[in-house]
Length: 497
Image (cartoon, rainbow, N blue to C red):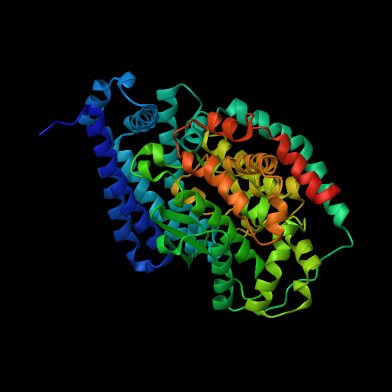
């Protein structure tokens, strides 16, 4: 019997971690969709136990011994990429004390449960006790990681979602956007003045909306043999590549918000379902980063889903599912999909005002983690930011204000910037896809999205994490991340178009 090499033994350990993560993903999906409220505390304890088990496996002396014994020069290129990702994951885990990992898992599950009730009741004060604990533990994590890496506390959390991204680079991108976004938003609103679309008139049944959503998912290539669509309070995509779970939320009086949410989550799902199968149980087979992940959801929801070519394709499906009405006329549907109207809810925001929602959250969470503000200060900061960025009043409306997102409940500070980075990358990817496939828009208008989907599959999905983010973007588009593509896209679609 031939003994395995240190690298092969390390791969076996990470295959085991993959299976643990699979179980955690399914438990997390159930917690947000099907689990009765009374099961939350027991589920929180079980998921915390699993988090500790995974952390212990990841940081075990045996894991580190195997890493020390591997000669990278003896590995093939793909194996070297996997070793790079393994090393990063182990390095990031070692700095975290197991008791902090367990405490964060418990606090996050309890805070998410409280959030569901408190948001429904517009109860900010009731949310604070569990949220304070999440923030306290997140600050402790930020401190530990910052001391280990030499960066700032917020940057240390940011790099969990976007490895290698510095605050200097992020601020350069966001400060530039702060300069041009307000003017572009005002110009887009003025350009559309007097051309308000006819609004769809419900009621629209949940079953009918679900069937419509599933039809669009199939058109986009979603594999229902390895995934499903459900309902949750906050839409998300979870699970694992072999079993991807999507959710949306429906409204009886309106039908397009749920559909666009489904298209958004389908972008995440198509990415997951098409990661390189030969690396599926290894870090190199995972999605590259959250900005890249968001670029895939926004490529389908914004770049494709709100394009005139797609919306006109959607018309007969809407009529078949929900019945005909004036709002479903083709030109009106385009106006609906491309209407610019600042609103309170981020996930329902139009493409032009959406970045303002991200700037608001980025400013607040960075100040919170760095200790410049406390949780009690968030509502006032939120109200001021919404008024300044979008001209909207949210005073006293916690449900549609600082309680609207689920992300902070589990300590996902540093995540929100990746949404706007993903939107920028989506515009850049679409520009590159059009150069590579000149017939792309014509084919979409004919009802065939395969040119776009195949291009994304070849250039992004099947690459997994075999390449670093910068190299992945440059190979796919011919240049580093260039936010000018995003600015140009918004102007061409909403002002010049």
